[in-house]
Image (cartoon, rainbow, N blue to C red; front, side, top):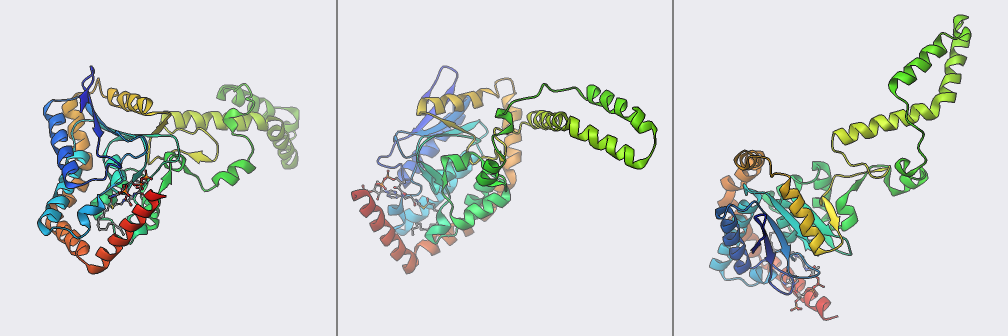
Length: 346
Ligand SMILES: CCCCCCCCCCCC/C=C/CC(=O)SCCNC(=O)CCNC(=O)[C@H](O)C(C)(C)COP(=O)(O)OP(=O)(O)OC[C@H]1O[C@@H](n2cnc3c(N)ncnc32)[C@H](O)[C@@H]1OP(=O)(O)O
């Protein structure tokens, strides 16, 4: 852990080669989180010493042919890590400088803000694809980060997101739809916007024109049609300007037509230094907010999810131990480890 001049702690996971979460690393994380709380750090940023992996998730070796007592301690320590991180009163952010599968994604989604390096990295909860049901609190971390429906699809498909996919979900128009619609409106030529007053005056003028005075339905319709045709660009422009203003007011980032940002990650960065800087900027947003009020508000906001695990802790542990001790799961772990080894030797 390194604390900078602003009082922000940067905690670097350093367990080569892939920061897989074994008992020792989880215990070290828990001690560090306690220190950050004790030192009253302004906030904490989690990152990795590896240039390509944030964390490979749970260390499979802890679950393969395990010692029963150690296996139980391992799971309880993982629960502790999540309770401390997800429930931390201080601001937390993850500078995700590489792959973040399964438990790696759990760490990232337990933080309040995520900046991921652009590149061929992936992030997600892939448990279902491995034939495992992710425990409720692991699912809750994702559900707390992205919209419920997207979380359900991601969890049931074991989806691993590319960085671009993680940053923003496409609307149902999708990429093809957006392409069919032509270049993004915001990048296209812009008409000088007119104020609503100008538009209203123009409409009134049109309604009082001689054509309108004739008072026949068809002529009125023609007049309206003419107005709509001649003013369509202005009308569309004004609608867009109004929409953009509303989106800005609501802090919705619409960078391109056909897409909206919902975000398993909040931002991307070119390198680790930039990712850490962006995380610091997020933490500094709270500079003028009383820290007690901020921390308590966050904990109340997360209380329901935290309480669920606290209430069901023993049952959750038993479920894990029963699962891992199944001969079928041990067989799968053996195959999975062999597959990982084979891949790494290529
Ligand atoms: C069927 C298996 C399921 C396992 C769980 C069953 C038990 C039930 C538990 C229920 C709880 C549910 C919660 C689960 C959450 C988890 O976190 S489970 C762990 C899931 N993690 C993964 O699937 C990631 C696997 N790793 C990778 O995909 C890649 O390693 C990587 C993309 C992270 C990095 O790739 P690369 O940089 O190319 O490194 P590699 O060459 O692949 O690996 C180097 C080295 O590390 C070993 N290794 C990788 N991951 C793990 C790991 N999670 N645990 C232990 N060891 C790992 C890999 O074998 C290589 O070792 P050697 O150098 O060959 O010795």
